[in-house]
Image 1 (cartoon, rainbow, N blue to C red):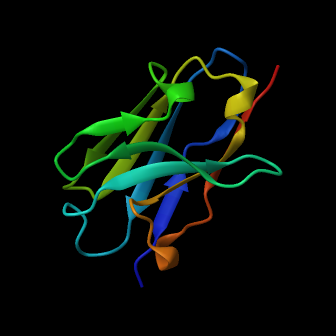
Image 2: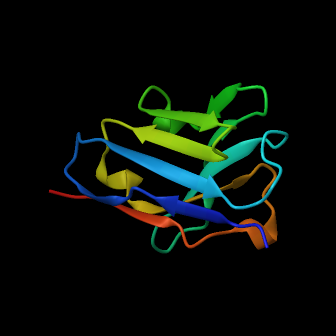
Length: 115
């Protein structure tokens, strides 16, 4: 059964960078708009960035200019380059289609920004 597998999280100091990766285990990938989501402690999961099947990207205001989403259809992967991280970016990060597919949710990858 298809699902997403996220990796690349960790502990980073404010101002630092991380690159998240997400692998899709299904067979068809390139037709889907994909997205990164995050869920901070005590908060609802929120959409962070979208990349369409055609490569158009969209970001929430709080990460514009700092985060960059990309995809590699041949490898069935989605990436999130995160720069200038701040403590408010601390969360578990997930990837999924947009709109999301319930059965595709993975375990996410923890990003902690702290000095």
